[in-house]
Image (cartoon, rainbow, N blue to C red):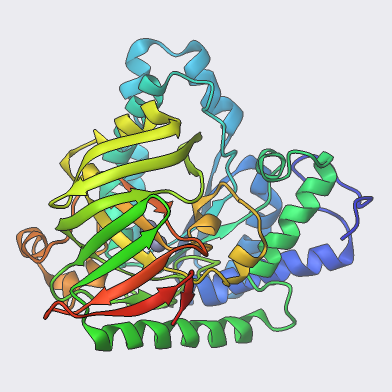
Length: 423
Ligand code: ZN
Ligand code: ZN
């Protein structure tokens, strides 16, 4: 796409090629990402900048037989007004009724689609204390709905939409229309919407990710050892852990691919068995604030030292959310040659950056990454090592300078990745 493409803020480009790719993205999101069932309801969330994509997705959802599509639009500018004019008590308030309603919709069988594309630095000028209070109140209110999602009881997916603020963050030196066009190109490529048959392309990619996860499941490693600049970390894996990648069959029987793009295979670490130091390899955009050069030390699974060169206050408040926020809930392997990493871009959006590098997540574990995990009680999950928290924050620890070893129950180690690539 060229830089002279007609563009108006918040509206789609008008070229036929662009419209075709946007349409393919919407179609593959509904058919392959979501696996929407005929007659199923859909609850979608999006920002106002994502209206053109949200409309396309709505169209394809109805064509796929959706009974009802309900989109909850959020306006980022309005979100900022709370910080300008809200009274102190406002920062502990959350629309509990709304999140309860979302959870109720999922319990009654609705699917969930989120369009990502937020301004990565929206809240960077705001008081970290207030940001943290808002995040906490929102996470608490959202938890019942989020649990249905993290337990994969329903089919769900996240897709991305380029927005002016996000594009400006990724391409700060380009004029706005060119930045937006470049970001769209990257999204279409990573989401395989630039291919003639995105559904077929995803089928092949999904099979490859499953094969990779299967190979790791045969190994039954008890721990992974990450080594690189600023990193010497041993991550114990949960008992009966399962490696997953690509699509999954939700509790409601629908097959979905929860993230588009996705390049990772991931599993549940043991919450008490992380040891050593780890340094982030990419900045993390967390709830509208950038956190850079994170360095933490784990002891018996718990963070005992943490600092960040930028956004340190936000990092400290994040790990103070609850006891589980200091412990690991996910470990994921992504080769440095993944298409998203090869783009060389820093997206400042977890959906993309976590698929460009090996990563860990602080907080809530996915019970689907344990054998029979969906039918285990919270006590059984905890005894196998699955972490519990209000947060789940992925951050990147992989690069082409990271080696990963797999350690067997007997203590033998073998190379899994060298210089960021599969062995
Ligand atoms: Zn992940
Ligand atoms: Zn994650």
